Length: 187
Image (cartoon, rainbow, N blue to C red):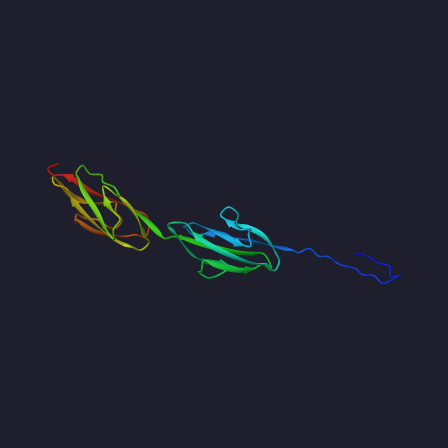
């Protein structure tokens, strides 16, 4: 409050500070990624909230890390596009959800015999290459090929795959380890 004596013409100027609102970006899901803002201020996961002047339109961009996928925005932002915008007319929360897009298939060779395990789609050629990342939901066919003097004795610790068939299938809905047993003949 101020007062002025009107003994002549006067001009009074009122100055108002721009108020600010906080933008908060929680990262959710079992994957990982980053979220950056334009104008600058958000660089999440390092800095996941920032105060912006009221009325500022903030553009957010999600970038999943390798092995993850961006699922979408929720809260005060929505949609499944990697880029979204929010107007800062009050405090806002925009959740960014990242999920795992790949799962690792790991082949262990615990037996005393020798053999090769190959996959379809390609990726596994064990004992040379015994693990590979596949897209979630991929059905992988594994084929065991015992070396001379060895026999195949079954799939162990391989999700739902079991039995002594040389060929089995696994669905990559999470990381999975399989132990095909090759044994020396006569033991």
